[in-house]
Length: 192
Image 1 (spheres, one colour):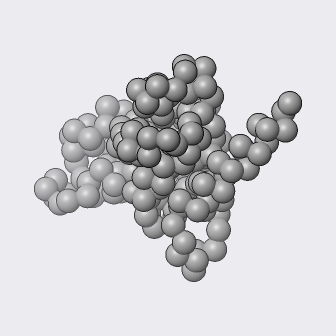
Image 2: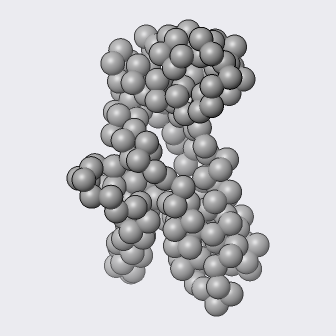
């Protein structure tokens, strides 16, 4: 098992999702994940503290991309326009591997209470990153929090539609996330 091969973290995530899908989260061990990924167990622990952490691989990067997009949105952008800029920036980092893993990862999450809890914490972290970036732009806290939560929901809805769409369609994630954000904007307007 060559520990020095590039892409170990991504291979570990793919191996874990495959094993979680095949045999369930609880029945999957770190040793099995490392073996499937072609790395040692110690390499696994250099990248992740435990198998739950595989679920949030890339969360810090995603949070940073969302926040950077919001920060760099035009000065006159509304809170949701700034969130849209964040979604566009973050969506650009999602490629074919992310698209392929989406349905299998969601199935693994749906089958495990522990993964559902970790996924909820990931959503909280992403919303906080967007909220903080909006507050730094001068958006009032309550508005920033609502816009951040809508941003997370739009990202999740857009990602679900994108990953379930025709694989021959090479359209990127951004249009799906932005369409989901627009649907949510319209839905909030109808609340009265």
